[in-house]
Amino acid sequence: MTKTFGTSRDDVVALQNIDLTVAAGEFLCLVGPSGCGKTTLLRILAGLENPSSGDVSWSIARGCGPLRSMVFQNQGIFPWMTVLDNVAYGLTVRGVKKKQRREVARHYVDLLGLARFEHAYPAQLSGGMQQRVNIARAFANDPAVLLMDEPFASLDEQTKLILQDDLLRIWEGTRKTVVFITHSLDEAITLGDRVVVLSRRPGRLKTAVDVGLPRPRNAMDLRNDRSFVEVRQRVWDSLREEVVSLREEAS
Image (cartoon, rainbow, N blue to C red; front, side, top):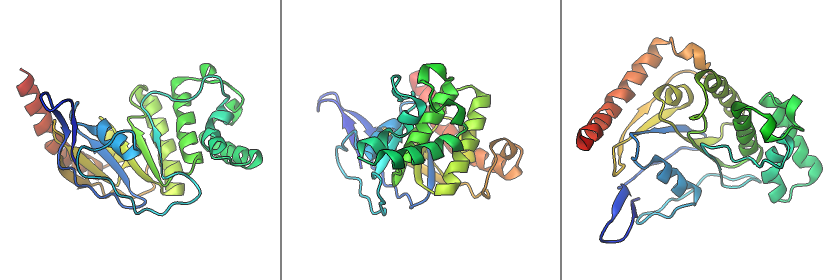
């Protein structure tokens, strides 16, 4: 699959010859230098962009929920809705009966430690709590595939660690197929079964590293694990070439 932006005269090739298979139930993390097309790839998977050539095919089994849901970097919750109504929004759109959707929404609200705030509005929540609402809404909608575009990028380091543990805990109970974009190598290795490194633009699949760390995982404890450090070095060795090459080109 290839994605090109612009006119034929001023074409910008964002992604080139992407050939990627994601297994059902896999937590796949994508890393790469800025501008390599990570978000473009995710938007194509989400159906928000069309590839210029090639296609995306799906063979994953679907339940009652949608094929895919997306969690964006910036909180996408509705300011006029309470926490509970935000989490239940996808179910509301799908026409799920009120009693059932509230039961499902309350389940994920409780899992993410938001029970005391289910009647609160987003303006009354911290940034980390707002992103918990986003995650709860995505899981409550029960998609076959969950697409996440740097959902913790704007948060402080301590909040990131807590939310990584929250995400791991919920994911390990559902085993959703996840494609997760991040700039943080530590985050990619903490969360992922596999880390795919994209080259600088045009983004191509450079390498894929199997993480191989046992589950369940704890975000903080992993940082001191020798295997974690070894995997991070392998990913960084591949990524560093692209970052240095991009810097040299800019200078």
